[in-house]
Length: 303
Image (cartoon, rainbow, N blue to C red; front, side, top):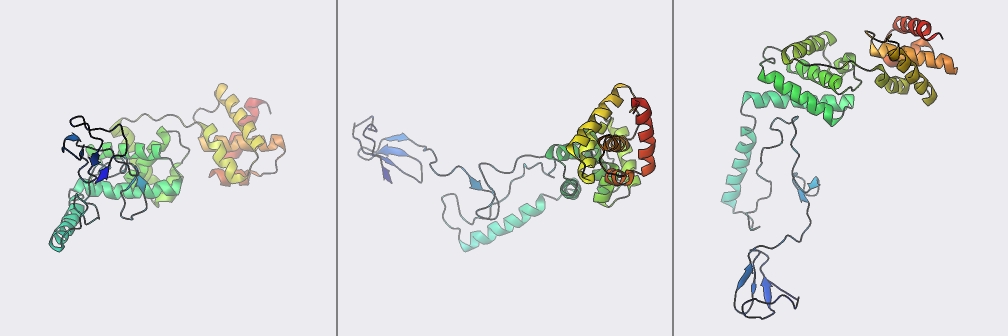
């Protein structure tokens, strides 16, 4: 029990200034006549709680946010690890054994359905690819949304879950204009590029997805970072690609090849000592591609 020390807190019935607060029930009442003024009290402790099994990790005001990239979207509930009742008292030995059994069955029941098992396997693979390819949360959410739509239409039946989630991730990268190629995703997922491409075409056809054309300017920073090129060269390459887009010579060309050729042109213009092989290895294209695109840019821009 805690007595009030504020002289303004007087009992409205008897007028005495001895209000008492019960910390367990949250009641605020008069210590003389017993008149209950309020039956709830504001929580004065810290706003955070630990929702993880470790006591002092994962402090937050709420639980895990909802996400399409979780098999239950983050909406499932769990029986907490603390063996205490609602009033904070420790459970008896018999009740502790019962609660432990309930925890086990609660954990098992969350992946009882085949769809949940499918989602758990697919999104576990998606989480691994996210770390390998260093893509953002928006791309992961979009990939999970595409995969859920594919599962609703029955496209996963008879096909590899890993290949389909990899193709969904590639589709999400294309949709959000994140510069990741099929080759990057194939290397990260350890699946053949041909299989991912086949599943990607299936998703486009069955889900009626409309993908924007990849802008080669978005690929410049990535190639320049790998090749160790200067900021001046990157800006010159961006200017070259903007001119190429204006005069309509970039249509139908591979974005990585075009960006690599523009960077090589910028290297030649700025006198930066980089060979075609250096730029080609950084872009993941062949030297022949750079030479062909270089000739086209040179003629079109009168360099």
